[in-house]
Length: 264
Image 1: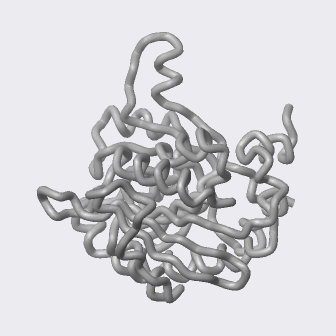
Image 2: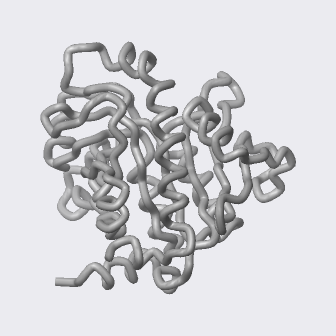
């Protein structure tokens, strides 16, 4: 069995032993991102020349301790004016920004549904230990495993312990609600939280050989009594505030360290 150092090397390549100097934070929704942008006093790059012309994507940049920090978001849908949520916009943004900025670490920060059966509460912030999909159902041998796409997160046991973060497996799908089939697959994934982009970003980060940390604040209890949409909207602001407190703690923690330092 590979040790934690071997897993880090596989996930981050040569970057694992390098001191973290540049961090790219990917956030799906503007309401999730702006409290953090304000907390970190980041400045919007209105030209955003690193992005394709016409893309609605946004980038906010600044410094924190010894870190160069960039927050990138997919922006608003051109036709409907709502946040460009889901796996496709997040993947495209992460790939383009990752190639252009060459960060030493990617952080995916956002909101998620949590399962009370796994101990999740509204406002909890989780760090993902594993990623999987629950809505890519391909019932053909081998393709079925590809559809789920299970990936381990980089080992970050020391970071989790020192910052007293909760940890759990993350399951990703492109719907806010949960069908019975989704529920079956989420249970099979042994997930504590579910979101709409995490596993896709893990795939892109692995493709680019850039280490990824995923932080998710719980907005709704999926297996609770309240309707998901109602609870999500009710708790969005509070969850965004939780992220604006937690992400800076993680950034300060990783500053001056290597990815390998996060595990031991």
